[in-house]
Length: 179
Ligand SMILES: NC(=O)c1ccc[n+]([C@@H]2O[C@H](COP(=O)([O-])OP(=O)(O)OC[C@H]3O[C@@H](n4cnc5c(N)ncnc54)[C@H](OP(=O)(O)O)[C@@H]3O)[C@@H](O)[C@H]2O)c1
Image (cartoon, rainbow, N blue to C red; front, side, top):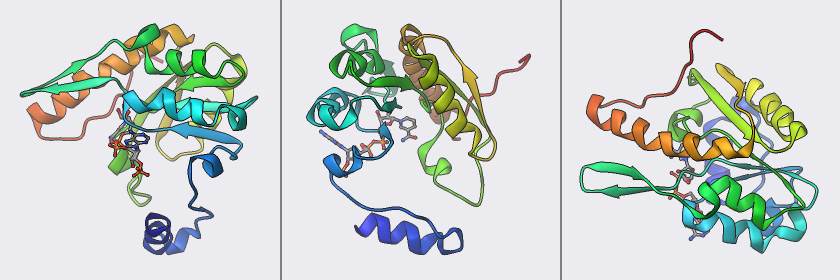
């Protein structure tokens, strides 16, 4: 509730319609985003599997480990966090998206992050609905990255991005040319 109040107050001019809730309450939303540490994502989805039935579930989780000065991509069961969630909640439509958008900057409503957002899913309707959400956010461009099998390289690439952030002391995002 404190976080919700802080956001509503910080962005008062935007009149945000947001509520605070536990995972069950959050899973009652029409679209559910899973943004936990990677090793908690599948168990979190499983806890609310009934509420997620028939819904679009967006995973933005990256399986990474920080080892000394470097970030290393991990290989979760089924190759990606998103594929593992899809297997755990087969009655939901899982899409993978937002893996490379820096969260703090994304939360700054006054300074939109300019970035492409790779979206993949085994369900056409999930790609389309996720792309619509991305396109509604200023300066983000959704790109259809195919089926959920591509979530593995998309998630792993986040390790490269974090490494670049450290090397160049920045918060890098991804833009593709030629599309
Ligand atoms: N940070 C970024 O810039 C960014 C960008 C793109 C993608 N991602 C991905 O998004 C995910 C979240 O990243 P983050 O930086 O927001 O991480 P985070 O702050 O460590 O975790 C986000 C939330 O996950 C919940 N959580 C933590 N441990 C949990 C557990 N064991 N079981 C269930 N829920 C748990 C916490 O909620 P409560 O506080 O309510 O406990 C926490 O607020 C990660 O997989 C990351 O790779 C992050």
